[in-house]
Image 1: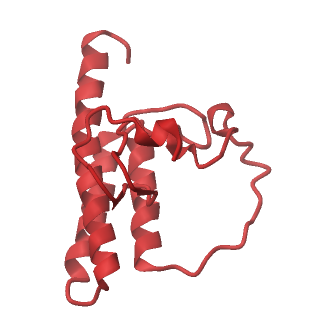
Image 2: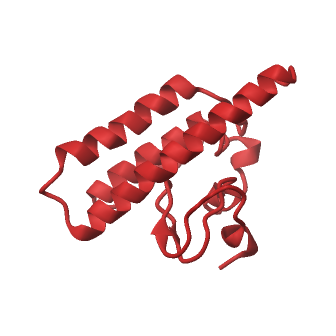
Length: 148
């Protein structure tokens, strides 16, 4: 596990869990999510929208659907830079909608999930709520400092 994955700035997660982007952690979770660039060193440079490869996709699962929504929510909370622009922005209404969508999936699939799916979805939802609070606070701080 990398040093970034063991960083614990504000998270109460201890022990094994899956974070909002679907990464599995065995120690403390970091809320700055520096390790979540998923190996995409070009993310900070932006992606050329005219040269996006059409990659084969894995078979969708409940976890991958929730993970994709969680990743979009983290982009909307400014945690992950927008892959098209390479910039972080706060779109908190969009983030809330995406978090609510993950919660809806959790609620509507009750009784039809495996234990692993339930545990993973619960972890994703918890992580997203914690990140949303942190994003609200950071946006308010930046607004007060005139940084936005």
